[in-house]
Length: 131
Image (cartoon, rainbow, N blue to C red; front, side, top):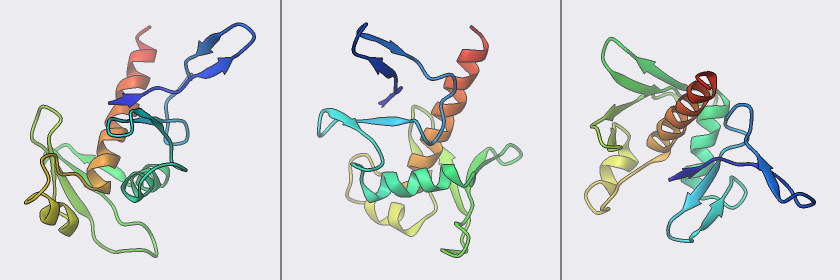
């Protein structure tokens, strides 16, 4: 689950929703820790996922109906393909995902997490436009 950050005003005990959701203001809910987590408290997977978002490296290939995670400049040279299998289940072509998919109940990788955040940002901002 991804939680939307708010600006809290202690004097009035109210919170404001952000005008737009983006890679800088998204906060994660950690089910295992049962608390909100941000990039400073986050895992390496989450930190790398945010790097892909901040550098605008997540693209959607409408012709092939897949997401692409472009390489981080001066870091790697591989473009990974992320397939949406439905019901929030994704598969990635990266080596890490292929390794953990054999042992984890809910396998993920930084590329999948970046796509999930990309979709959440798009969904949130679209819903704000329709209000």
